[in-house]
Image (tube, rainbow, N blue to C red; front, side):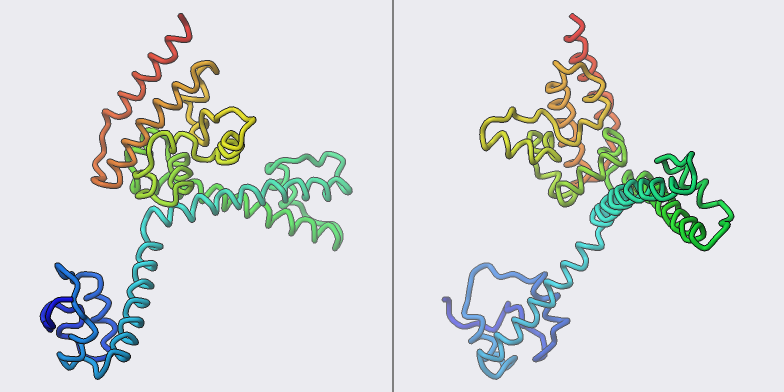
Length: 281
C-alpha cells in the first residue's frame, strides 16, 4: 500500500451513511493505484473505525448493484426479450387451450374443430344452459388470449426496429427478437462470433454432437429466415454461415452505433444469390 492520503477515495466529500452519494461515487470514481482505503477513511474523519467503513461500503455496493440491475432490466433490449418470451408463452398456452375447447365443445357440437377461428365463433354463441355458458366463457377467455398473442406480435414488429434496426432489416423483427432473447441481450449477441449465432436455438443438437454420435447442427433458429429455409438442402449450411456472418455484423453495428446500414441487406442478398446459383450448376 502507498502512504496514506485522503485524496481520491470514493468516500471523499461524503457524509457518513450517505448511501445515495456513495452509489454515484462507486460508479464514477477511480484511482490509479490501490491504497489503504479503510484507514484513509478513518484518518479523513468520514468514519470512526474500519468496521464502520466496511458496513458503509457493503450497503453502498449492494445499493449500486441494485440500481445497475434495475437500469439494465429496463433497457429496451430486455423489454424486447420479455415481449418475445411472453409471445411464445401465450402462443403455447393458446394452442393447448384451443385443443381443450375443441375437445369439450365436441361433446355438444359435432362440427367442433381445433382452430382459433372456431374458438372465436364458439365464444360468440348464446348459451342454452349453465354448462354451455361455462364453456362459452372458457372459449371467450381463450379467444382473448389469442388476441393478446396478436397484440404482442404487433408490439414486437413495432419495437424491434427501434432496438436493433440493422438486425430487424436483415432478419425481420420477430426473428431478431428471438436471437436477442437467446443470447440474453443485444450486447451479448454483438459479442458472439458468427459460428455461435448460427446455432443459437440448436443447443440440444449441439450438445448431442459434442457428446458424440450426432451430426453437427448447421443452423439454429435462423432456419426461420427465408435465406436458409428456401435454399436447397445441400446449400443450406453455406447459406446459414453467410446469414450468420451478416447478422453478427448487424448486431455489432446496432449495439455500438445504432446506425442503419442498408448496404448490409444488399450484400446478404447478393451472397445468398451466389450460393443458390452454385446449386443450379
